[in-house]
Image 1: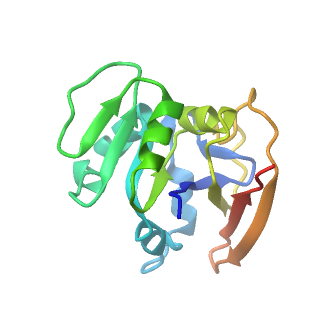
Image 2: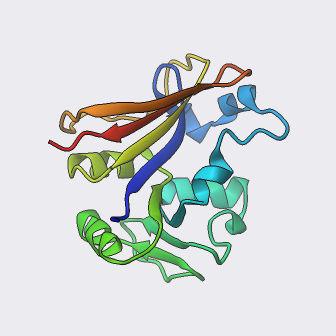
Length: 179
């Protein structure tokens, strides 16, 4: 069975993954003690994380280095600037399609793309995302970083499931339709 590239991400109802200045405070409106919205179950299916440098830097600053580099997973930070690797974190500045091809050629669990929007857009331009788990936060933020940027090809998706949670979050699980 081939490894899949999966996006697991939260967005406002109007399609923003962050407000201006990388402000993610709107995510707090759905926080609930003991509720992770399927994140632990999802991360049990992956052994590789792919993310952009801005997302990586935000997580380092706000959550800490152990969030990604906990010794259990390989981490690839997509960046334009070469940096030395740290632990199991590789700073990658070459071709993203080549990296995905290399990762998919190896055995292992699935590959988690944790954003950001630029990496997701590049993956979409190259038809490299297999599944999306998108958590819709019940808020219209009006401005910020859009989840889906312009300039990518049209892609058809198949709805696999939906889940509604009591804080108003709705989670949509889609699979790419291969044509």
